[in-house]
Length: 193
Image 1 (cartoon, rainbow, N blue to C red):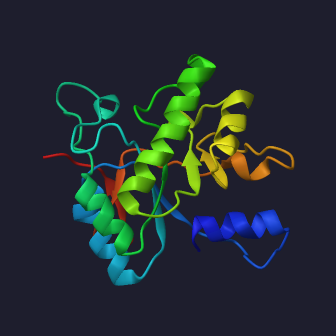
Image 2 (cartoon, rainbow, N blue to C red; image 1 turned 135 degrees about the horizontal axis):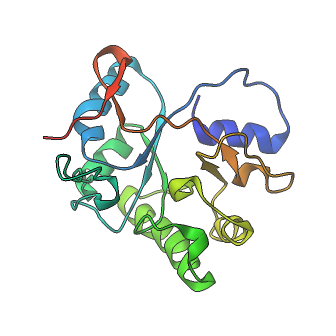
């Protein structure tokens, strides 16, 4: 099931989606284009990529584990556009992947709102979802995500859920770090060239 579809179902109070499975990818590393996209398309599986928008075609420095594992390359504008046209949904994940609770209100607003605008400029449609970097947020972040026009947001903080009316702005999602889809949807460790 698509995440936007699930959030719409939650917001309507419907219960038509039983035990949904969603495939999400944080950050928007280039290996999604080369490894995941072909398999997702082949299997006709819906997915969403939460894209860091300020580092397109650059590297995800925060993902480097040590000197033996360099930071991964990030998706380019062209790859994002192609993936979006192929049916992959894209959501906001800030401009620079900061720890949002540590920022001023103005910095939070820029990271949240401007990343949405940047992403929408690339994909040519509304970015409806947001994912909190590192899974961390505070009440101000939730308020700014809603004010930016997102329909919902996720965190990797397990068991987290706000009460109505903001429940769709803090839904927890299972986090499987450093994994990429490999053959036939078997999850394996991410490897970088």
